[in-house]
Image (cartoon, rainbow, N blue to C red):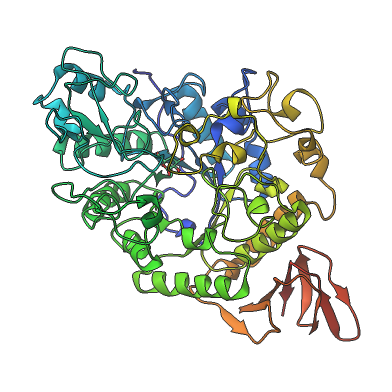
Length: 563
Ligand code: GLC
C-alpha cells in the first residue's frame, strides 16, 4: 500500500541531545482500548489523537503505542501482516502521520511497537513460502523443518509455545493452502514461539535483516521517536535448534537462558539498528521487551551501542514486600550502572493483571489473575507503589487506565475473551483480556465515553465512577494523584536523574528513600507507623496524621517529602 504523505513531522528536539529518555515517563496506549473515534466499538488512531491533550495534561513525556499495523488480529495486532500499513480498524497512514504530528505539537514523543520475532501467517512472505513448498527460498526466511518420526509426524524438536502446546505447526503438502488452520499430513513444520498464526522469522537470513532495517527507516521517516521492540530476546535461536530437554518449559522461561530466548546473537542485530537510529535527528530510542533470567542479562541489551532502555520485569513481578522491593531496586540500579543506561520501572502493561489487582491478591499467584481479591487493599497499595516508582531514578512506564486505579475485569464471560492463549490448554493463563477492557472517560453514556458504538470487551458497571470525568478535579482521586506526582517530578528534575538511591534507617516494613532534597516513605505494612516528621509533605497516596513532631504513615501508603 502506498500513500503519499507530506514532509516528515517536525521533531520535538531536532538536533539537540537532551537524553530525554533517561528519566521520561512513558504512557502505554493500547490502541484498541483507548478511545474509539469512529464508533465501531474498537479504539483507533483518530480516537488517540483526540485524547492527546489529556495525556499532555496528565504530564507524561511520551506515548508508546501497541501495534496498529495491518493484522488479522490473532494476537491483538502482535501478528503483523504488513509493517508499513495501518489496520483499517485503526485508520490509515494519514491518521498515523496526523497523530505523530499532533503529539509533537504538544511536545509528546511517540514510540511505536515493532514486532520482529514473528509476523502474521497472512504476511505475504509466509503465504508465498507456503505456496512455494519445501526447499523454496522463501521458506528460508522462516524456520521450516521436516518432522521427526517415520512419516515426519512429530515436531522437529521439543520446544513449547509460550501460549501453550508445541511451538511447531505442520503445514499442508506443497499444493495445499496450509497455514495454522489446516495442519495436514505430508508437509513440513514451521516454528512459532507464540500462536500458530505468528510464524517466527529466521534472523540469520539477510532478507529478514534488510527488511527490518527498511521498516525502521519507514517509521523514523514518518517521525516516530523510537521503537518498543517486541520479544527482543527471541530473534536468534541456538544453532541446530536443540531440544530444551525438560518438561514444563514455561516455568524455566524466567529463570534460564533457553535455546530460543536470550541468545547472545541478538545483540549484533540491535547494534546495527542503533546505528540507523543515530543517523536521525532528535534522539530516537529503542526499548527492549526482553524477558531474561536476571537484571544483569537485561543490562546487556542496553549497552552504549545497543538499545536505550529495557523493561524491568523483575520490578513488575516483585511483591509488595520491603525486602523484595529494596532488593529489586538496588539490584536493578546496580545492574544498569556499569552500562550507563537508565533503569526503568513498570508496574502494569497489556500482558499482566493490573497492579491494583495483583496487589489485591495474595502473592505467588502469578501475573495473570482471575480474582478481584480485596479491591480496597489493591488500590491502596497500587497508589503507594506508583508513588514509590515515580520517586526512583530512571524512566517509568504507565499503562493506560492505571491512572484511574482501574482493576482487571476478572469476570469476563469466556465467549468474549480474545487472548489466544486462553484457548490453548497449556501455556500462559490467557487472562490478558482482563487488563485490556476499554477505559472509561465519562460517568455514563455509550461505553463510558470510549466511543459511540459500544466496546469490543464489555465494561463493568463500576467503570463510570472510575472514569476520567468522575475523577477530574476530585482531591485525592487516583487521577489527581498521578497528575500531581508527575507535576512534582517535573518541578524536581532531580527525581528521575542519577543512578542511585540512599536508604535511611526505617521501622520494619517501611522504606525510607532519600534523593537530593527529597524523601520518599513507603509503609508496606497493614498498620500505621509513626516516624519523626522528616520534612514538608509534598504528596501522599493516603493522608498521614501529624502529631507533635511526629507523623503517622497510614497502612500501605507512600508519602513524598521535601527536605
Ligand atoms: C509480547 C507482547 C504480547 C504478545 C507477544 C507475542 O510479549 O507484549 O502481547 O502476545 O509478545 O507477540
